[in-house]
Length: 79
Image 1 (cartoon, rainbow, N blue to C red):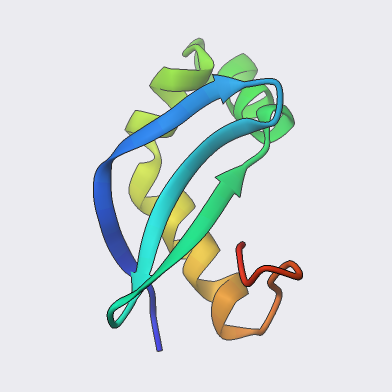
Image 2: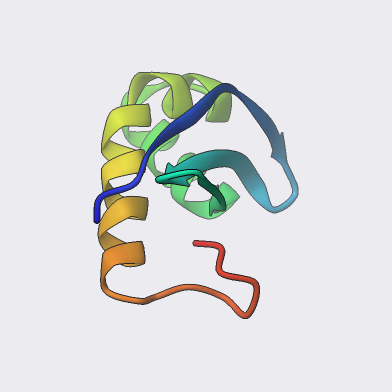
């Protein structure tokens, strides 16, 4: 089942990247995109890490949902 955006707010960027929440039905799923991935895209686009996340958020969320659907979660069920 594809994940849906849970909240507009997100945490970061920090040393571990940006943290954001997605939802599987009523269950919130914590997700994170790495600082390295944000920096790589930022180098190619000229955006800072927050700008990359905000500009490409839909794409990032789709990637998180795909990983979740493949069962690629951490020990706590996060992506």
